[in-house]
Length: 165
Figure 1 (cartoon, one colour):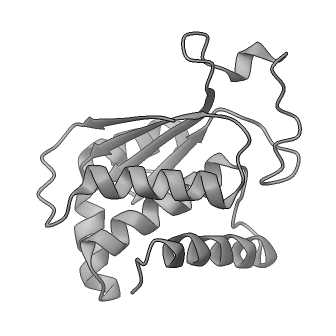
Figure 2 (cartoon, helix red, strand yellow; figure 1 turned 180 degrees about the vertical axis):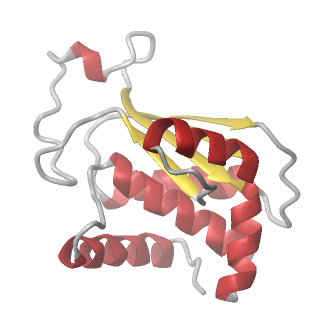
Figure 3 (tube, helix red, strand yellow; figure 1 turned 90 degrees about the vertical axis):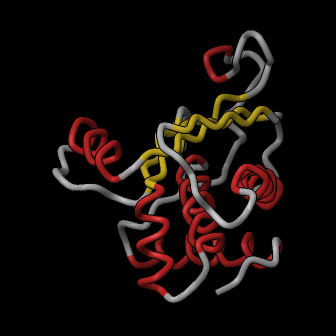
């Protein structure tokens, strides 16, 4: 697995965020039985930075907590059967890894929401990465049944890591 973190802002967390992020990405891949080595990019920004990206790509004029930019298109969430070594566009030519996509997180929102929801910054950070990884696997939460499936996957991944509320 290749996992890259780009910091656009200072990350004054009281935990090793790089270690937590990598553990969550790895646990998510394992939970979903992802059949290939994967590449994931994480950008840590602030409310101003994520606001600009949210406005540009989603036409939503406000900051958000996390944005996901999947590189793959799924017919069924979590079904990787469409991936094939023959489809070179899905693989990084230098590493041979599947390029899953990009995760962008607002450090400001991690801190704000940890207080709002009454749990640790570590838990909020891990939750947002888990949530985004599931989007990179094709899951969504636009409908109640989709949201329930996604929430169950999130809970199982975080529980496996011992990261609870």
